Length: 347
Image (cartoon, rainbow, N blue to C red; front, side):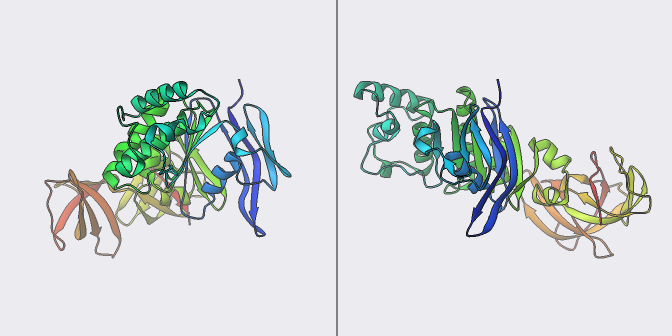
């Protein structure tokens, strides 16, 4: 068994500009992979190339070991046996929900189409709504219908292009987890494109962080956060600040707010100038702590408060305090460093 989907050194160009540059990716049956990155990083172009909407100028794409794209040839999207969930849902307003879901089942009888539509409605939690029209549904319900339509023909691969961007934050988070469960229950293989980390974390088994038409790191959400391989990933994933420091031992960095001994060794020469990544969860409130800083800003998050803390030198860091630690701008607080994972980059 080889990978279900394989991209080998693909390049995509548009008006003379390289959008995707020597990108390779393989995805096995049942994997849910997210392409995550800022606007313009090429993630949607990769999805369009997989779908057959975007030709290749270099490289090859295989689905089930069959070559579907190479320079000069692009197999039509409808012949790739994939399901697509678009950003705007692309549902037909003149059809009811059942007809929308059954749209890709044209080779079946009316009864078979209705039976599968009913099964899919149950799968996505919309039983009994098959007779309704799109305008009678909420945004979250429309999103579920779009997913049901994509899954109805039992595609080899489901592609989701920023599928939650039209929804509010609460609905987005809830639906992300629901969509993951629906895809997992069906052992579906999926590729999600998003610029939203929380969506990527909620859905992806693994996440490919992209920038400049390349994949910079493919990893679990945990590893991307705690073990970023380069400065872009460290900066893009989560929140954090880079604090200037000096490598005083291969696993120890000295900074103005303390010396940190880490869980990894760096091979740079001792005395090297480095930047130490400090996440908000690395700065721990501690009444006995050696460090003292002034509250510059606060953002209430419910169970936690995110404080921006300023030291006398002008250095600012961020820290998450439990919500009952209620401090106002200008107050002094005591803290300590609590890094379980040390991440540093040479300057």
